[in-house]
Image (cartoon, rainbow, N blue to C red):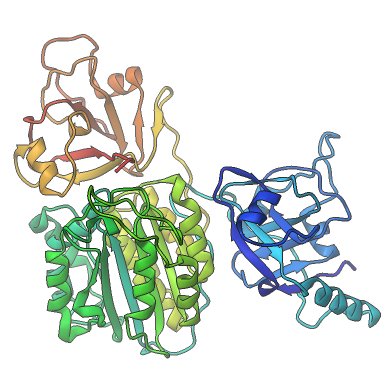
Length: 578
């Protein structure tokens, strides 16, 4: 019977490839390592030749600290089966959802692909592994800890959804329902991300007081506080469900803003908040100002350092850090961009070291990646992996409340082993009509359920990136520019779309966007979108909106004076360059 052996991940240097394409030789040199033939293992992401003499390691995403190798790995993965006579071994996509596959490379010219991982065997590790294998073979017994490798489970995800992906589900902690839970939420407050934190102000204080103290729910919604309070607060009746939770909040900009606003700060001077200090938490959120970043990278490395060193984490608590952002950290030695006349020193903090320190303290990281910035994928994925945490995607800031409540319940279930509260909250969100695709994907991942199916659309409609727009609610009549700026956003003509609810003149130049009422998905398409919306091309008279059962209709505005109507929706197009 084919066997498999376990190899500790600590036998390898774990590296992430950031360049789009780079040779192994150059990559190894950049990492200040010495190239040794056969010591490097690249991540398999596409069909290719895998010779029988090449060693293959498999890393189970749900148990990332150990690698599996041996004959059974090849047998189960089908490494040896060819398709169409091409002699390139085909890997089932289902496998890549549950496992990472690393293949030995004996060539230093091989190109590594950006966003993948690379394992480099440490000096002496290979000899130790060979000795262990020889001992096992001589006794004709497998190592006691080596499991049968059976491939992906029947419930394995069939694909990685663009909405939300989990790198590793944290192991359930031991203890009862009274175990202490500590959570720190870290927010990027630079231009593109500040609206995520600013939406707290309408509901946070009332919610925390209603929940009578220790339960850490952050309800983020647009500025229509009175409307939202009536629609959200009646649903939250779990004030006694997490009796021992302590909360902290970090807000950070970047080094560029240090001399004008602030670089980084935390609620209650980095002390966790309980029921006795709720007002301090609320005051902090209400008074945090936006910042400027200056360049693409932001000081996430500093936020991780402060989270690891400034908070008094309890050794017995169930601990987590929720990092919410859209960009990447500065690398060690990088000189941050600064205002004219200012000069910065190269950064010295390595986010990987800080992640390792958090892991040592028992803090798992929920890496919440916002706005679908694909160039940030590797950072959020690797941050979650390094701490046995979660990599999640958040497309709509209006869903952040439900996101963070779900995270709180997931942490509660990790400490008790009971998912009743998370399942109950999922039912509550669905009943309230807030279960858009992004949230559906979140609950599916947290509860380890199959991903949501894509709904069929009318022929001719074109899907739009889920993070292209932020959906806002207009609380009262006001001009577009005023509405946008009140929410801490940067106003640009043509970037706003008003909801088509009354007779309007719609020119041929205006883009029309449809939003699926059930899933929250966006669609466009010049001809089909107009036809569905009842807009006749070229008509100069006002046209009445056509009531649609499946879609909300939004029309592009190129005016900064246009009056928005209270109670309607508004799409704000995100500038990914901010």
